[in-house]
Image 1 (spheres, rainbow, N blue to C red):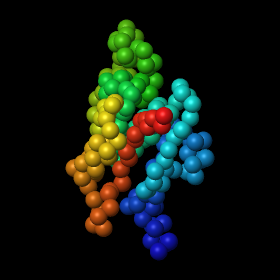
Image 2: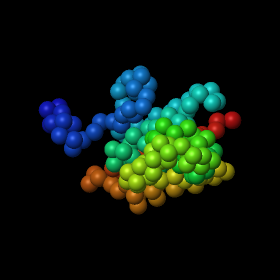
Image 3: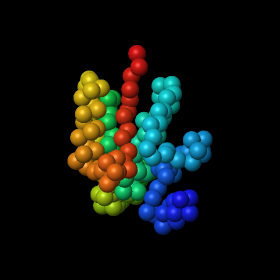
Image 4: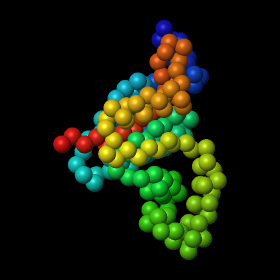
Length: 169
């Protein structure tokens, strides 16, 4: 079965995991990728970049055509959209958020180009501050049923669910 697996991987019919191209050292530390199916927990001190990492992983998955659900207990959709646009274009977040990118023609061009090309980038974002975990689990199940689908054996197709963040206090 190993030969068949390798042929499927080489031909693109099968993936064993999701790679995040923006964090190669972290991916190497994790063994090369986030494996399917798996649960990966990212834990660190405040303000060290957990959410930007999660957004980068979500972006990489979406670019690869993998359905992504980003569950956010902290930031609203518009702010996350600005963060994603800033990381994809290299335009500073403050210039995106406040619209001052229009004062710099090269930044404005980057934004317009990304808006045109990035339309295929699909990340379903759900704001759930104050929701109970049981309600969030129901949301995930419904999303998998309606957007992701299942394989013939009944397991879910490859997808990524980012839960940012689980408070443990």
